Image 1 (spheres, rainbow, N blue to C red):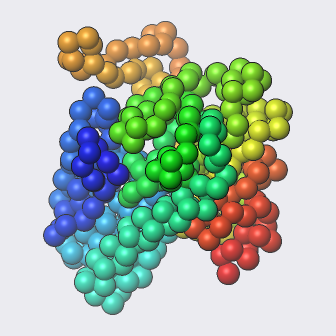
Image 2 (image 1 turned 180 degrees about the horizontal axis):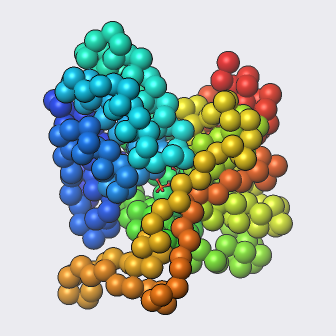
Image 3 (image 1 turned 135 degrees about the horizontal axis):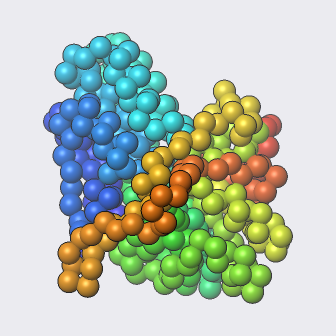
Length: 341
Ligand code: MRU
């Protein structure tokens, strides 16, 4: 990824520490947070210093390796890491893989965690390659949340085809849904697209139907946190609404995700646990004033309750195709089973 012309990874493991771009500070300041222990890495996942299915998958693998390095009880460590965020499949996948490798040796656990992070980069790059031909010169893409390079170790899922098309000389325009309450679209996707020099505009979350009804959107591409065996897909809250509207107007709706996001042990979306986060995320917003001083302010009626489900599930029937590192598949049980075989 490019930040002011320099290449960075969202997250990396060096020595015994995990280094990650602090996504809570973006786009107002850019800083790297160091997590020296498994506990610190878990805090960073829960607080969303690092976020996005692919990136928290890498973080979870690194945290498990840190537990082995520190000779912590691996079962307790695995439980602790799994308890940070319940929805993204990649987090559980990485814990399983590094836990298994750690039965051999500490070095094997570290190697496996690094391998998983590298395969996250490779998968994202291939998703970009397979998704790129879907984008024509002049295509206008709507995306929700941030499924770009910040949500992965690099490249991203939903945005990877956009980056490839742009680098290949196609003109692409992106509508970035703001993605309340944490504003991953308005803050992170918009910042990424600016860094890549891609034409875009931030739109309110409730603008999707208006834009699509006016013929302003050619396709929707979103990421995924967990894909059930039948293709039902959990992604950031609000994704399902975009899928319904896209179907209403005959607009293709693509999900982009690596194989590590598929969960064959969950038959349908019904079985996906949806994280509920603090009401404070709905009630308060943090940002700089005109002088650059950061403030947290209340934006809702004091005294009212707020409910904050972090994800929703889009049924497979609303999804045109799933872009993976092995190609684009139909979201149905036999195509998914064949892909993972
Ligand atoms: O709560 P977040 O910001 O971790 O949620 C992220 C998303 O929903 C992304 O769209 C998803 O992880 C797919 S791509 C990284």
